[in-house]
View 1 (cartoon, one colour):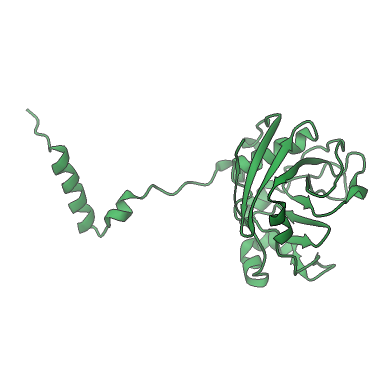
View 2: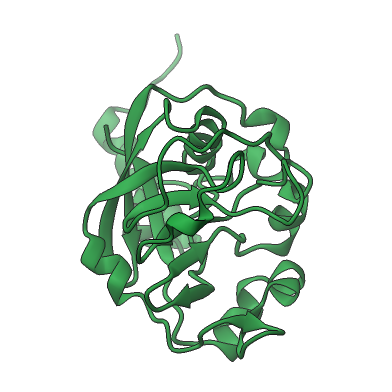
Length: 228
């Protein structure tokens, strides 16, 4: 007949062993650290179709805001943003280009390895359905068509001149907390080499290590999550 340790005695024994190993009760009670989503290094894992509408709560170092996304406006952009939020891509990312009255740009990962993994994960352009007016949220792109990846910007003013066919297509808008966007640190101005702000090339290679050292006043996304 097998002997059993009563549950209370088992708990006491476990605690005694932990203490002998130098593990405090507080550490014993902690949950294991969450592992990074594997899609961060493999864009092929982040291809879910977004809901028709959804909301994203963005917690930043300047306060909170809520972005409401409408897939009818820009389906490819809405899908990409949804996947980025779901895998935690924007957590700890810096608002590295904030220009007063123009826009606040973000979307380069804290880890250069992750930024590199997504550099070639481009999506096709969406037709421009909505205008880049104050509060609208839009993916950034290069000079060539179909070059959107992970960077997006929030319009701080009326930038309707960006409304070109298949160019800067808004996919959402800030519906709560726009004052947070207006409070993002903008003292560094335009990025290098045109201005004195952060260099995207160096962000790509060095990530937040470079930004924290050379641009300590930047604001960051702490956490972004789907809330509705």
